[in-house]
Length: 279
Image 1 (spheres, rainbow, N blue to C red):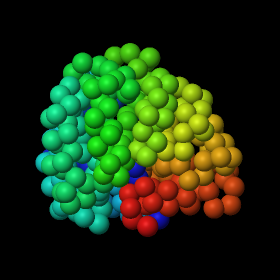
Image 2: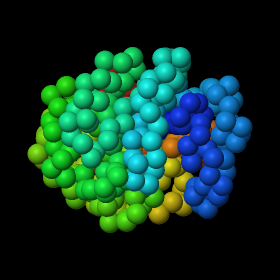
Image 3: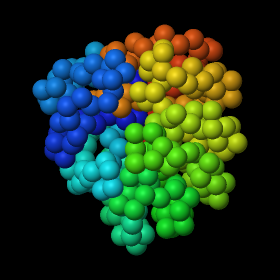
């Protein structure tokens, strides 16, 4: 069984996002083909591909990132999860420019079926910011109080400046809010060793490298596996970043790595299940 920590389905707001509509979408430059379900924007095909890959649940990360990534309304994501409760759970996207509006959105969405956390992309906000910007602190504080994990998406492809993917500010956030569970989606690639260092120092930080871990030649990928085998078997999370790459191919590529006994099963399922409150 597999939980995919980053799966964007071809439905509602996501269906018309650039991940499905853009020509020459960047993962193809890394030799990653497009899934048939993504090309046809077909939910029926996606469910078939999930079954073939062994993916029992997909986590839809919300996106309110008007700077560079765009906006997918939380209500759209909530409808997808409600229509397919055995297939999806979701993290609500939160706008970072207005702390009070962000707090209100957390309160509004946390009681909606399937909402398991909050998703932010500071580098792609209308005004790009670091993850430790003081305007975000009230959101972190409230999520810590509620026990809601926060996904911080950061990589060289999010925002206009790869420096904003530096995980050092996340270190400061994790130390300031030790009770807050933080998921580093995309794991700050290419700042791989620094992200691993933050996770080493902060037991409340999880790494979810998704497509940056699912290719044997991806620079830095093996270091995530080494970290899981050595000191963080319970905090590495698997994801595909679909539609960036087909699900079955992503699982097969990940399965080529060598793991200590029991670690692979934790990464593919149990770590996410525990984070999401499913076990």
